[in-house]
Image (cartoon, rainbow, N blue to C red; front, side):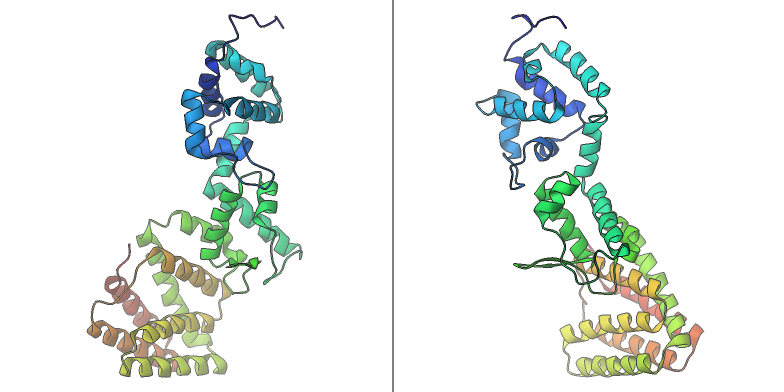
Amino acid sequence: MRPMTDQMLNSKYKTENLRFLRTHLGMTQKEFIERFLIREDGTPAMSVATFSNLESKGGIRLAGVLLKASEALQIDSMLFSMDPDTFARKISILLSDSADTENIGRSVARTGKIDQLLYRLTMYFAEKLMDKELKKGDKIESDRELAKKMNVGRSAIREALKVLNVLGMLDIRPGQGTYISSEEANFFIIPLSWSLFLNGSQLKDILEVRNLLEVKAAQLAAEHADDAGRRRLSLLAEKISKAYEEQEEKEFLDYEMEFHRCVAQCSGNQVIYSMLETISNLMRRLSATGMTGVHQQEEIYQENQRIYSLILAGDKEGSAEAMREHMKRSTQRYHYI
C-alpha cells in the first residue's frame, strides 16, 4: 500500500467522508449513533442534532466519532482525511472484503427499525417460552441487557417493548420491570400481533377480521358453551342491564367489552379468543371510541340481549347472524382514527 501524501490527507474531507460512510452503510443519523456512539450504560453519546451538526460543520467531537466508527469497523481512522473519491473506493473495498461487515449498514439499519426489532424480540421470547426458560408472569431482562443482545440502542428496545406491551404480550410495571404477560393473548399469535400493529393505519382491514372472528365465536359459543360459561354470560348480561338502566356509560361499555370476551371464551376455540384479545388490545390504542347519543346505548343493549338469548338457546345460526348485525352496527357507531 503506497503511503498517504499530504495532498491525499485533508481534514476538511472528514465531514464529507463521514456522511459517505453513513449513507454507504444505509443508516440514518439516529441508527449510526445507536450502532457506533453508545455509552457503557447503553445511552446515546450524543443527540441527532449534535451529530447532524458534526456532519455538516465539523467540531471538536468529530475526531472522537471517527475513531469510534473506525474501531468498530476495524479500519484506519486516517482514511477519513483522504479525498472523497479515494475514500469511497477504499471503504467500498474494505467493507465488502470483511465477513464481519458484510452488509453491516443494511443489517444494522434493518435491526434498528421497529418492525425488524419487534420480530427479533418476539421470536427471542417465543423461543425462551418454548424452551421453558421463561413462563407467563416471569420478569424479562433489563432494556440494557436486551440492547446488548440485539445490538441496538436502549431507546429502540424501549420503543419495541412498549409495542409488545400494547399488544398484550408483555406487562410493563413502572418501577418494577417488564414481565411476560399472564393474560391469554400471548406469543402464540406473535406474527399476527406485530403485523397488525405495523399496519395499524389499515383499520378497515383489522375491523373486517375482528368482525368475522366475532361472528364465528358467537356461532361456536351457542354450540359449545358449558354451564360455567353460560353462568358467566348470564352474570354479564345482568351487569349490562343494570348499567344501562342506571345510565352508567363507562360501566356499560366495560361490561359490553367483557361480554364479547366471554363469548369468545365460550367458543372453546383458543385461537379465536387469543386473536380477538390481540385485536381488542390494539384497537383500544389505535382508536378513539365513543357513542354519539343515548339511543345508541339502547341499540347496543338490545343487540347484546338478543345475542345472549340466542347463545343460551343453542341457536348457532341465529347467534351468528345476531353478532354479524351487531358488529356491522358497531363499526358504524364508533369513531375510529
